[in-house]
Amino acid sequence: MTVPLIPVTDPADPRLTDYTALTDVALRRRREPAEGLFMAEGEKVVRRALAAGYPMRSMLLTEKWAEALGDVITSCGAPVYVVTPELAEQVTGYHVHRGALASLHRLPLPDPADLLARSRRVAVVEAVNDHTNIGAIFRGAAALGMDAVLLSPDSADPLYRRSVKVSMGAVFSLPYARLAQWPHSLTGVREAGFRLLALTPDARAVELADALRREEPAERVALLLGAEGDGLTPRALAAADTWVRIPMAHGVDSLNVAAAAAVAFYAVATSRPPQTGP
Amino acid sequence: MTVPLIPVTDPADPRLTDYTALTDVALRRRREPAEGLFMAEGEKVVRRALAAGYPMRSMLLTEKWAEALGDVITSCGAPVYVVTPELAEQVTGYHVHRGALASLHRLPLPDPADLLARSRRVAVVEAVNDHTNIGAIFRGAAALGMDAVLLSPDSADPLYRRSVKVSMGAVFSLPYARLAQWPHSLTGVREAGFRLLALTPDARAVELADALRREEPAERVALLLGAEGDGLTPRALAAADTWVRIPMAHGVDSLNVAAAAAVAFYAVATSRPPQTGP
Image: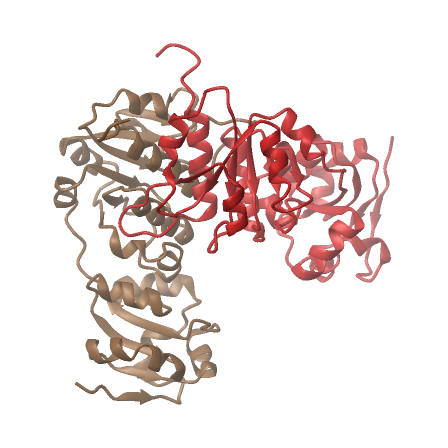
């Protein structure tokens, strides 16, 4: 199958609509979920998105990248718009230094109950609306062996360009779902057999390592994480089984949410006795 | 003691030289260490820098902040230049939204040998030249109970404005020193009784938790951390006693260096048997 490369020279060409004003965060936040699309930037991320099964809508490439991505172009069959770096900047609003942008279709998210049924360790994220933090949480959760992420209704979009980039593509490999009602949906998490551990700097919380030491090895664990700064809301804290904290030294109040999450994921991953001998 | 507030209306006033072109990273990187100064931004950070013993050179404030920092102004006796937000932006090159900037004197760094003599757990950082990562490593190291940080000659400046900000002031509370020769100075770390654990994604490395389980509780641990992307250099790896790795899942290559560091600091902090009962 030969796919024609389509040169475009007019920044107002309606075929480039998917790529307009990428730096306008407020606009893109509304548009992308509403239109069922998301952006992948850079060859590696584009390939990972396709490998994860997201269907391609189109690509916007400079000539150099049209060559490097030749196999992708042939196999996915979507239109490929070839532009100059200057035109790419005019349309998107920034210098696309990785030279390759793809617009992909979103897929329906799994049902939280289905996802819980096939998971043992999940991260539950409340009101993290910073795309960098969402991306970093996904990268850590995937790297450290969590099975899934559940998002509160007001958490940021994992498929937003910045989240995808910071996650290094982990948003494609780690399954996630959105909880419909907050904090009511947490009841469903518990009913699925998960023990809900809420991560908080509150002095009344149990030390994370102690809390995990008390868990049965087979138990399912859901780690509840709140936003940078405010932390978990009182109603999320009230819904948890146990409050856990990472001990702090040197008078420091807290860790960045992504670092705290990574520590907690690691602690969960290593809290079970080793499967094989020493 | 009454300190007169000094209104300044000319952006070229030589008394504001400390504050010029703060957004020119390359320039400030050279200038600040050479001139023995660093910047603190925002009321909280300014107070923490003073509490840590750094002498004030001057402050650049908008009127509103001159009131909020009245006690600081009185006690430190340094000149205080009062400017409009517009003038602050003209001088510094950006919108100083926290309204308070201070220029402080650097202090001589401790001798690495002295610092090692009074530490049990240290982070040793190689070639991390990103100010955000340096700040995040300090925040994690302080929060998670490391005693000190040792920096390779080519690591970024912890007192650079961005590092200070990301560290949330941890660069003031956690002692640090610079190693003079790399990697030769690592010999001195080992001679001070530290076991050098090099953090690497290399498959030949021992799992971090296993390596720590084998340590004697009293042993001193130095965690060697490399730069995002490249990781530790072969000669740093060669100088280590043990290579340790954080197990990765879902095909992820690595964690962000600050997240990896936080995980490792936490693992070191919790690897010793609890001091008190179960």
